[in-house]
Image 1: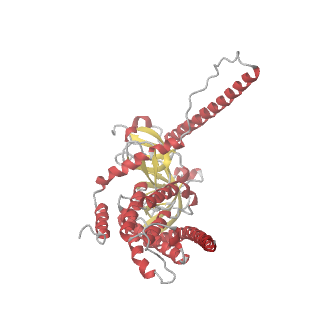
Image 2: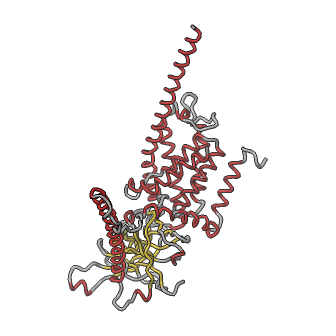
Image 3: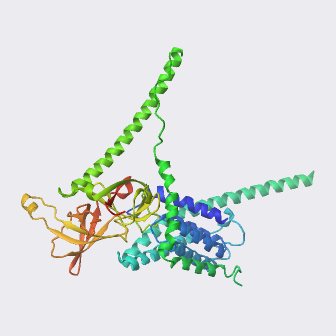
Length: 198
Length: 285
């Protein structure tokens, strides 16, 4: 499972290195890798999520100009925050997360409010980029604190648009599997009735 | 218990924290290894080089229809080869033009060939995924004589400097990166002959800004800077950076105490950069 997430992260990183430069608006581009971090932190056990998030961050560290370990630590840190807040955010009838199963399945994304997850993703992107910008501010002092907040906010908003699509697609996938399951159950029911009659 | 599932996050947290505070030169090797792994990308995007097809096949024994078929194929192959040669010629012409542009910026008594070795390189990745840092990866490394800190140009324009070097690839820190620092000067753009004889200059420190813009800090307010003035590199003490490379134009200025902080718009569009030149001072091996 962890290799699947790292594989997805690697694919997204290649995408971010090549195609996403075309989506850049005034030097602001979406951070899709952080969406993977949110997904991992929401739907996997904390210890495993931390490990995967750290690996994703390390991957990004290696592909960017930042010091090795910076983004790895940051991704792990924000992932840990998401893992900690998912339980308080969990509602009885409309859970934000569900950790009961041992593997990743589209059925996990059912009965959840997309807006909550999108806001959570945006907040994670804002915190992560804000902290990274703060690090640069203390190390190089090239720009002001207001600039860091504005930039982190814009990246968060831009990434949230992609989060909407991502979670909407996952919801569609869930609905499809759910409908298929209902259909299969019906067919199974008809078959059992027939066999009883015969 | 140390190995229990409950303690795993804490152990992992401290492991990650340890990695964060390890000395940078310990971590440079894995980074360089990944940079070397990027080398095959160059071959993916490179145009395929095929053996030249020479029309020396004896077709006299073939039927007229087959002769026509073979000749058509030969014409198509030759067309493809011609296109390849044309592309190569255009690429080399661009490199020559870039070198000529660079030498044109230098003083007449300056013989660049005596002072600098020019290493041309193709850009492999022109986008930094971090969102804050600005860098690109080129297909030349320490095997080609590249070392950390060397200036990188494109024609007469400054691109940045080499920051990380692996055997076959290198990472270039762009002038827009927040960690980039260099001495630079702003020069007035004369409109009349009288103004030409009285060029006004002001020195400052160029700093990246994480966006497509850079900033020239610590320019004295005695200099009457105006938007549109040009910004050039200043010669440094060790003469690693040549004087007179164009950085950009002044977009706006902000007063900061006794100094100006100029917002500079770089002339180069870094997203469309495909080739760069690395300047290596002769005698620095």
